[in-house]
Every structure is written in structure tokens, then in C-alpha cells.
Amino acid sequence: MLYTLKRILAHADRHGYAVGAFNINNLEILQSIIETATEERSPVIIQTSEGAVGYAGMDYLLAMMRTAAASPVPVALHLDHGKDLKIIRQAVRSGYTSVMIDASTLPYAENVAQTRKVVGWAKKAGVSVEAEIGAISGVEDLVSVSEKEACFTDPGEARRFVRDTRCDALAISIGTAHGPNKSRGRPRLDLDRLKRIDSLVRVPLVLHGASGIDPETVKLVRRNCRRVGDCDRLRKAIGIPDDAIRQAIRRGIRKINIDSDLRLAFTAGLRRALMEETGTIDPRKLMTPSKRLMKDVVRKKMRLFGSRNQAR
Ligand code: G3H
Ligand code: 13P
Ligand code: ZN
Image 1 (tube, rainbow, N blue to C red):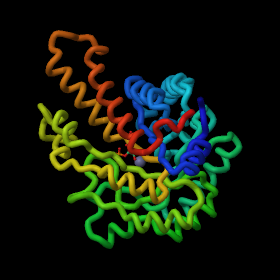
Image 2 (cartoon, rainbow, N blue to C red):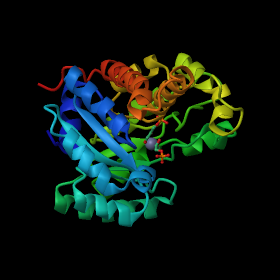
Image 3 (spheres, rainbow, N blue to C red):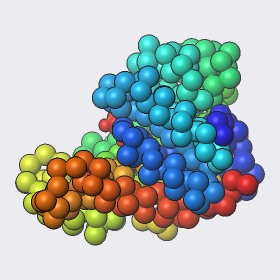
Image 4 (cartoon, rainbow, N blue to C red):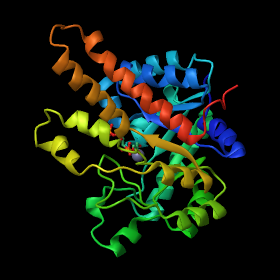
């Protein structure tokens, strides 16, 4: 069933759980997510980045996602990290049920101006809007504590931002980071800051960069991985511990974005198949282990987030 983000998150807020927002780029990732959501009776948010739109095309992605949304569980179709206003406008007009406007690296006034513009388009079309205040980055950009602090969401500013923009959900920066390298040591979330933001802001809060980065999956990916690019970076891969996620949900996080864990599962399965199934050239057989591993990821997240059995 197709739902807006606002409606899905309102239910999560009333019942104190979080909904997984999973990034897709192709059919196999989408099938893994929607099959698991249906089996777990969990609401789900399926999202595409602008990169995914560039890779697969918005029309193809939407056609697949609409098919997935025929599932009996609540499904929101979301544009993740919209930065290009043209793409956001196209998404609003084409059938996404929510869009993110990510102007978080711009000065406050410009972030507000762009977000208000998107909220104006979206409200007319019955589409929800997620916006971001406080930039979520990779840790390599956070050289010292004061730079790190400067990046985190200021609770007072978050309250003002929601009032100024009337967005439906707010992405905040409290210590997570995109990609498989979340921090140099064990990642720590600023849960006091989250609690304060939650007490000041009425809309549901969103946690980006929340992948757990399972060491066993990383090990599988690193078999035969060359020590360049992504493979080199995986030597120091570290994710957000499950317990930190549980605590964040207790303090008001209602949407949790997961991409890296799916990428790792996809690549681990495919790498193993390519190495072990040397007798086949059938892409369906080669991608079956990937789907199994991605379904495991989605299932574990739905149980961790408390969204299992919330779709009745
Ligand atoms: O938050 C970003 C997502 O992981 C999407 O990444 O732009 O490479 O598709 P992407
Ligand atoms: P991860 O890189 O931790 O999976 O975060 C994904 C994300 O925030 C997508 O918007
Ligand atoms: Zn993100």
C-alpha cells in the first residue's frame, strides 16, 4: 500500500519504533527489501538517491517501486538527498510520496529558502518533505572536536528550522557518517543532543549514515578485494553498533537510512558466487546469494528498529 512518509512516520511515532529507509539501485535490491517487509509485516521506506536516478533512470525506478508498493504493507517512495531542484520537482510530479531536500551544507537562510520552495511544491501534490539541518559527513572531514561540534545539529536551530520551513521530517547530525567508515574508534552518538532536539522539535527525526557494517560481511567482501578505492577503505570499516541504534530510537529517531549494509551484502554475495560458481554464466544464479544476504540485512534491521509486525 502506498503511503506518504508523514503517515508512515506518524504511526512509528505513536508506537515508539523506527522505519527503515533502504536505498535501491536495481531490481534485486528492491525485491530483497519488499519481500522481507512483506514477510516481516513491516512498514518500509524505499529510497533512491540522485545517483540511483542517474544510474537507472527515474521512470524505471518508479515503475519498479510502484509494483513493489502493491505489497500489503505500508510503503513510502522517497527521493534521498535531493540537491538538484529539477530532480526534486520531477520526483514530486512523478509519483514519489516524499522527497528529501538536502541543502544542509548551505548557510541557514539558503537552506530555509530552498526547503520552503520544495515544501511549497510538495504540499500541493500531497507529497511529504524531509529536510536536514547540521551536516552529516564522513569522519575524515571532522579533524578536531570543535570541527566535529560545528557539524552537529544545534537543537535551538533545529526548532527554528522546522518552524521556518514546515518540513515533515528532520534529518539531524549527531555522530553518524555515510559510508563504511563511521569513525576512527568506536562510533559514539551524541544522545543527549538527540534528546534535547526531540524535546524541541515536533516532526519525526531521521538518522542517516546508520549502517552497522557487519565485520563478517566485510571479511567476505575483502576476499580477493584489491587494495585500492573502496576495497582499501574497507580495511578500517566500522559501523554504528546496534545498541546505539536502540538508544537513538528510544530518544526519538523514527526513520533510519541504510545503504552501505546493503551494498556490502550485495557485493559479498556476488563475489562469493563469482569465485565459487565458476560453472555458470547465468546472472540469476550469480545474484541469488546477494539477494539472500540483503534479505538477512533487511530482516535484522526491521527487528532492531521495532517495525516488525507493525503493519496489520
Ligand atoms: O546517503 C547516500 C546514499 O548512501 C546514496 O549514495 O549517492 O552513491 O547513491 P549514492
Ligand atoms: P549508510 O552509508 O550508513 O548506509 O547511510 C545511508 C544513508 O544515510 C542514505 O541516505
Ligand atoms: Zn544519507
